Length: 341
Image 1: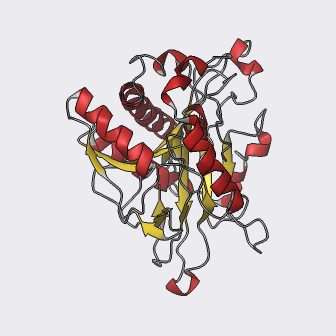
Image 2: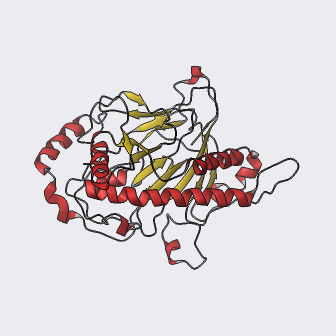
Image 3: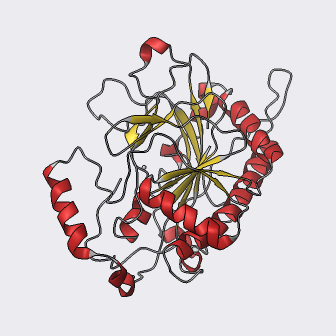
């Protein structure tokens, strides 16, 4: 499961020299009203960054993040540390890697395990049942189910799409006349209406209640993360939280079917960067996530029990003028096992 966090405001003017970016799993926060951040641009060494941009432009295959190091593993950060120390470590990870593990957070393992159980029960439904919730049936085509191969990240010329199926969930408090529905990234959720019977132990109400409880817990953690991001950037502690009062957060449940080790070059999820503010990923024990370092080497990010994986999205990278790295990553599930996230 991944949560892509996006703020409730659209960004107007970015820091001078900001770079463009491009999309993964459950929480993203995206901004909605125009906000000028240029008053903080004095902290950026624009002349040095301009040299690095020119060098990167001459070689598009090199990741354009300015501070990335040739990491061989993702840093592990204790979310229970005092806030100043936590903010400093997160700041370093965002600049050098763009990814990190988060341990000792406040989301209980029981809730995390239950979210996986409910995710598995949903994807065990028949394709016909899942297709009734297809994204094309939602108002803006952004909520509901997509099937294996329907998404194609990374190489657009590859013969088959990504070897994954997914289910996207957002806010569940919208009413028909809600002003927020004017935003194309806000839409009603589609929920299954299947109930338990002698052939099926899936409960729609249990699924909805449990997934929304998990989403609520992860969003609470995201609030503290945004404070740490702000402090790490030497900004007021509420700099980001003020812009995320109604976050356009997407909770994405994913299932990767088993692939043979012989299919090690077939992507469950093609190489990409995430488009939102940041992503919170809850991966199962199977693994398969790989992150690309500055030398274009793919580094495995194996599951750490009880940990979330946090990664910077394109929005945050652009908002910080490339100070924070939105790092390319992919999923290769060549284990021969089912993978859920």
